Length: 125
Image (tube, rainbow, N blue to C red):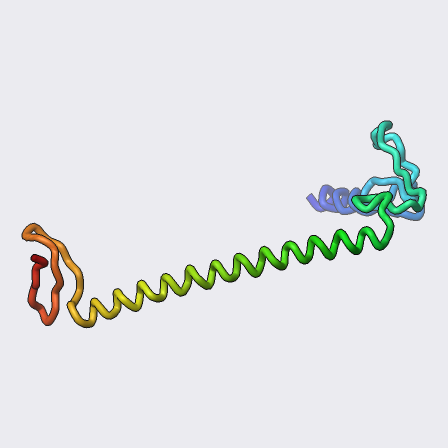
């Protein structure tokens, strides 16, 4: 059993100085092209690239500033709507609290609907 364990440990060791493959089985020098897609080409010609290809720096800054302004305006609009919804909810809860304090707790049973206050049922007319 000990020999089997030693063999597994020995198999896991990788001597990267002697082996042309690195620790993960990849070519250390980056010229391992048999695994790459032949259609794939890297074009790093220093022309930038990405979404801003062909735009000047001023155009990029203008576009980004406009996007920031639009999103800030939308953010403020949504924040105002959220404040309004919260104030409406707070007003409703305040009214429900006042009803509970003055009239009692709302209930319904076979006889009808009403409020319970001080252990007495008061039915709605």
